[in-house]
Image (cartoon, rainbow over all chains, first blue to last red; front, side):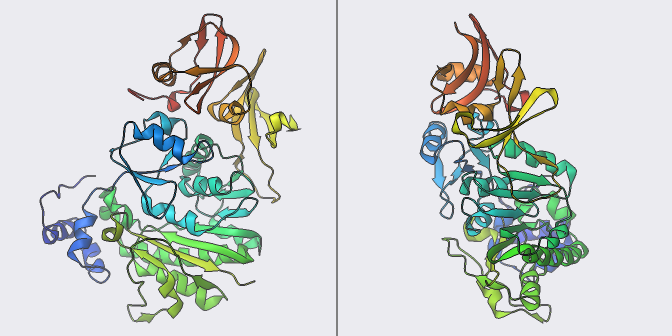
Length: 318
Length: 124
């Protein structure tokens, strides 16, 4: 679904958003009502790729792609580049699995996870596999990744991407993420890139604006709280859990982290990456969140010209 | 097929339906698995026909049966075309430092096995 926003002022874009989904605008007036927010929400996303170092070095692939495209390094991911092309899906580098088409902000969770070769990692909502394949390359195909997703049609895309990227350490499972709470203190790392209301993806497709419902946000928030509790239970003491979403509603972000902090001994770690960020929300709809939530990474579209994104890095004390 | 120190790859290999061979690293954790393993290649009467990923695993270590392609030939191969090359048997195709899978030569032509979903359309 496309929307013609070219030449519109931010105020006019906001009204166009209101026409498509008035409840969305009403809600986001309390989250970010700036002109920049609407200006960037209407702007198409920049194409970005990640070099798959399981198959080739960054230098080799940059040299090859650089003959046809202009590449701009992504500051927070050594293997990531913005590309001056609408699509890279049909290139030989893509078809050989040398690159993975991945939104720039979506590269942050795997970087923050700090995996090492030999680790046992749980990726609770893995499909389509962008972050799983990124984790595999940081692990140098050594160790084990449990790559889980609940939906069978999404699993097939995940399997196809694991194949194209040459991942040999993944075990693909099809479970409700809450299943993994039975693996108490088992995983060195847990990634929960949670199912969310996808507001960050409105820049990719305006259907996400049309589909957005507050009731869905509330229901997702309940699910996310259960998933983060399950993921934390499955994490080894001393291990790191990364929670991420591509949405900006505090109910799906700070409130979920706050829920974990209020019910466990979890600690939030700083994410020390060169990323422009917004202050996390510490109070929303009369609820006050733990002070530690301040360490989370909240990215609005205008901060780095990316999708809106949220990342929390959690430590389970040893 | 079980464990094999095939070319020192340190991988397990397993044959499944249609004589397809999958490569994987063992996981110490018992989980109800939906899928595991990388499609490595297909066993045929005269040897194994490697997948693109199989050719990446083996290609860097292979001392022979590797054919280097120029841009034009790589483009034809990745578009699904056969290559006129005087080679016999299975060969790994290489373009720059990258591997493009495996083909089978009859002395005149190397037959293409690049799956449709991995082919390119148009230029490199």
